[in-house]
Amino acid sequence: RPPNIRDGQLAVFDKNIRSPYTEHWTFGLQRRLAPQLLLDLAYVGSESHHLFTRDDVNPQQPDGTRLHPDFGPRVIRASNGNSVYHALQLRVERRFTQGLQLAGSYTWSRAIDGTSESLLVNSNSQNLNLTSMPNSLGGLKLDRGLGDYNRSHRFTVAYIWEIPGPRNGIRKRVLGGWSIAGITTLQSGAPYTVQNGFDRNGDGFTNDRPDLGNPDAPLNTRAIITPASGPGACSTGYRNPDSGACVSPAEVHFVEGVGLPNSVTVGRNTLLAGGTNNWDAALMKNFPISEKKRFEFRWEAFNVFNHRQFVQAPSRDLVNSPPGEFLNPKFTDGGIRSMRMQLKFLF
Image (cartoon, rainbow, N blue to C red; front, top):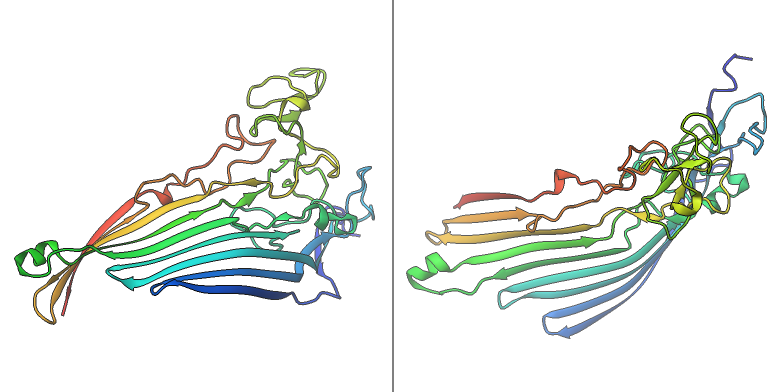
């Protein structure tokens, strides 16, 4: 056999692989609260079956050997995944009347699955490899949790308001014709998984999950395995890499895990990144020149209140995150306030 047969990875397709399919259902009520005010309430649900998954059919055993020790990882692409989605959707719309149009919507939802993406990279660069345990040992059930694309709450409001002003004379040209429009978006953050930083299950990847120490300890406290004797040793067998102090698992929230996942292993997608709090607005003014000609002035502001958007998952590698960075939010400057003005001549 080739000399690297133990180390090489082979990926094949399950001969019984099936095409994924999704079942949808919905139920809604609509009510007119006033001549120009409409209420729409709906429940939306779906289930997906035979989603694509990846599984190592030659997994590492608890004693460190593989099921077939003469071979390395043998990955099979199958269709064993399932997901479910439930949502309550509420929408209120005020049709344009008396210079005001308003539309607001709120969604309360939950997306649950065992793996969200087996082939590509998602927004938080996670869940793109194997399950935490082979599927034959219940890996998909162990990994069942919030889907990568779950956003539990989402609220949006869009509006247009024509500001009342003089209707004739020179004052109309200066003070009339102004309007304000905007969109407000408030949304829950994306779920993410704390990573062990050490390949505890022998599948060749270090994105396994750590163990839970003390759930009442501060969320960003951690402990990595340290020799009990020799230079830099800790009698407890663990060290907090942020403080440098020797600690016990009962003093920190997360603990470096070894061996296959067990009853104290942290779940998948148990933490949430920062949400979205964004307000966009525009101020507009028409300057009529004649019946067919006019100037249009428009001033737009994005993220008007300059809210910091910590939407990216923080550094979550328990073993390899530098001191002080573990689970600290990341600020991305792509969402800072920006403004622009434009003047158009229409004819």
